[in-house]
Image (cartoon, rainbow, N blue to C red):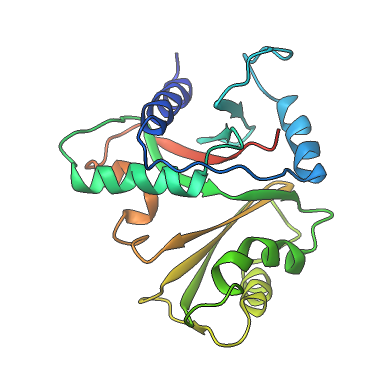
Length: 227
């Protein structure tokens, strides 16, 4: 088994072990038809998965045609933001208890859309509403974008659009933020999520750095299932 295969196997084991903890975070929300569409498209690229299985899987590994990037699809009952955060908190607190060798950065994705048809303002509004538009004190925020193999979007325009959706009352603070908005674009798919003020302390969810870096690691994308 190559390093990417070992990384996927390792990630599935890590997620499965971590979800057994009581604070891993349950979540049950309705899926969007567009997300269902995207997942059907992604599943065509899956290697080694057997379609038609009657047993629902908590996690499914999706192989993408992008070097060193893997995609892990979560069951809709599992909150990817909470689970990845908890794994990194545990790694930060117990760096000597290394639980992975091949995984590098883990990026939780709350929801995905197709880049060709997405209305970025509407999409951002859905993701940001519980954090910025549901009352409470004003928040300081930052935005981090990562774009791979996509010519439609550029970093500056994405940041400008997402920042406008955050709305009045909140302020930009790149160093001392309360929340950081993560926008990831890979090929024809865009994903978005929100992380807390400890994102930098947790090495931007780079578990390899939290455990003292190991060679031969790769990125892992994780997100909620929409089935």
